[in-house]
Amino acid sequence: MVSAESRHIASATGKLGVLIPGLGAVSTTFIAGVEMIRKGLTLPYGSVSQMQTIRLGRRDEKRSPNIADFVPLAKLNDLMFFAWDIFPENAYEAAKKARVLTNEDLEKVRAELEAVTPMKAVFDQRFVKKLHGTHVKTGKTKHELAEQLREDIRQCRKKVSRLVMVWCASTEAYIERQAVHETVEGFERGLRENHDAISPSMIYAYAALMEGIPFVNGSPQLTVDIPALVELAKRKKVPIAGKDFKTGQTLIKTALAPAFKARMLGVRGWFSTNILGNRDGEVLDDPESLKSKIVSKSGPVEWILQPSVYPQLYKDLYHKVTINYYPPKGDDKEGWDHIDLFGWMGYPMQLKIDFLCKDSILAAPVVLDLALFTDLAQRAGMTGIQEWLSFYFKSPAHAENVYPEHDLFIQHAKLKNTLRWLMGEETITHLGVDYYQE
Ligand SMILES: NC(=O)c1ccc[n+]([C@@H]2O[C@H](COP(=O)([O-])OP(=O)(O)OC[C@H]3O[C@@H](n4cnc5c(N)ncnc54)[C@H](O)[C@@H]3O)[C@@H](O)[C@H]2O)c1
Image 1: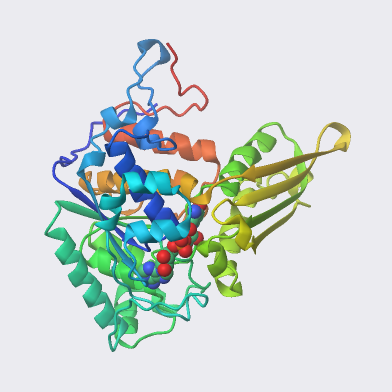
Image 2: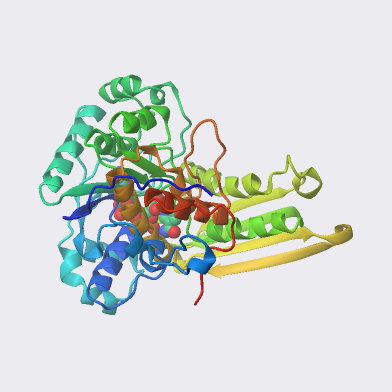
């Protein structure tokens, strides 16, 4: 156990602006939910920052405050929303189109949603082939576009005390790390020379960091996960986090895989398939965007099971992930998992999971927690990659010299321990005894 002095954390007074590239299913569901909670019409289901307790000290001390009372987070009443999109529809119209929430619910927060109108986006169709944006900025160079975004951010800042940016826009085409991504100077040269390997999400991230604003990447493409922007975040003393919200199938997989490993059960095969019919699904119907997602969804199981440490159990694991666009499903994604396990004497068993989930319903509280926790990190002077937020990501960003932590329960413990450490409480390294019950 380690105890620490509590860190100085600047106060959370004043408004917190959430800057959101992408006014689609996830972000409109997030905004509508926050507005409903403010009106007392629902509760923040799924939000760890709002609903969970945190045990402090030994179990017999019986101290388990709510996280929201323990750490100085921005209040939901202090949130304001700003967005960019390649279509001009306001959040109410976009939410209607996304068809996640019922018309009845949307009417209850209609005025608040209508007040969120998107700014013109930075867009390049080479990165999202399936969409044809009309509400987009023009500029001779990517650097000029970044400057326009910075000006947007400065305008938003006039209305609030602090800002965070959470990328909720479409998944971009897969690209690998290249020379232009290696240094801040090379990246800035690339912006001026319109380098092909600088995607719109990187331009938003660059603009945010230059303005000293935390950046969270909810999608699977690289974005801030490149040395140039990691370095820029350090120089500007800004927290960054990513990538790809962990919401449905991967959430379940990163809870199950640790259970198999904990009981030394072997896994021969793990087949995961998804069908979804929202716009996210349509974007993923393009093979290049799909590759970003598949890469992100494929990593966690191997990292958790450690086939090199447990070759008898996992070296022959055949892991396959597929995603299929099927319009009738809308946002009601269906994720199937078929797992071939083996146990004592090598006898085979099967486990089948059919998760009938709602993608944006799972993602919205994740957006909320990430906005609040990165703002907290900023006020606590925590800069660069926030590995303690790995809990929320399919493909958690990590320092070059360590492996990414995918195990949901270790991620959860790390999240809570970081909160304890921030407030000068003892960290609790033994898992499974985190919850004190009356
Ligand atoms: N819902 C989930 O469970 C989940 C989980 C992990 C990741 N994500 C990611 O979150 C993102 C949003 O998902 P969604 O279901 O809301 O998708 P969506 O298609 O409903 O919304 C994305 C929005 O981004 C806009 N857009 C595209 N490019 C843009 C740009 N350059 N600038 C500004 N706006 C842009 C689109 O017009 C659209 O309105 C996707 O990248 C998705 O992969 C979602």
